[in-house]
Length: 333
Image (tube, rainbow, N blue to C red; front, side, top):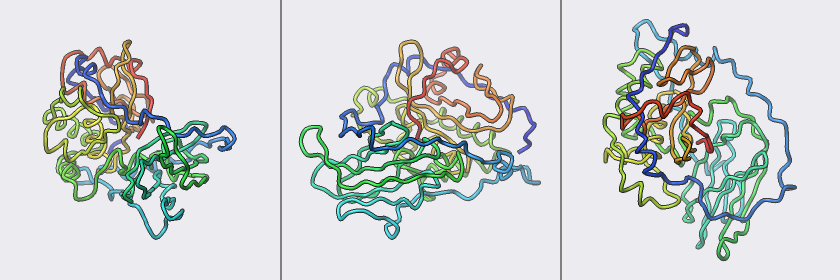
């Protein structure tokens, strides 16, 4: 990719009505046991020392003029590297790559807590020993991981915990891999479709553009699902691709899976949009170029750029996205 090329994006338009259809909250609403303030030490988080030119050198357009994706970076649970108790185990072998693995068995409901920088993030995990992968999106820091078992009501007891300093290999690491929130593998239909689209592109933005156009052209918003979705809902990109319908979570997870599989750092973001605080999910992908435009949102050099496929699939009012100040990011996956 030629880094000095001016890259432009014209979004089809933003559908305000889609925002008010609603979307599921990704964090379970029922709180688990809170952590005490003295259980997590605070440490200064250093900036990730990753040369951007070196990172994006892998995306240089070859002589053939076609985009060549780097090898897909997949996260797997490694049972031989996991440690813990008889009922709960953690795989910390991938924390430098921005993900943690966990599995547990119980006859009761289970929660997984990631505590970092004074914040607790709660996740549901299966109680049948099925491994889960979760992203570490707070940068390099001390993380505390806790596997919790329900006792009564909203009360939980700890099955196992571990604290460790995490030094990410790259600020992009969590956004180049699969997780429970963005599940995919080399055999996924969405990955194969992304590779097909990428093969026709000349650079990163060409891949993003192709994926963007494909998703908004082939996935329609499911109002019934949005009105009836249950707390704790998790998206399946291949299912979204197969059914051709989805809610904001599904749009964002599908786009993230497709772009990450082609080596493009992509965040899935949950948050609020507009004065009325409509809950939504969208994507952000990284660009080292300047001049990139999303509707009227100018992306500065070396910044994450907003990509809201739910809006663009409806095509009504591009001013709703505006200059990006309508968006309030809450969770990153």
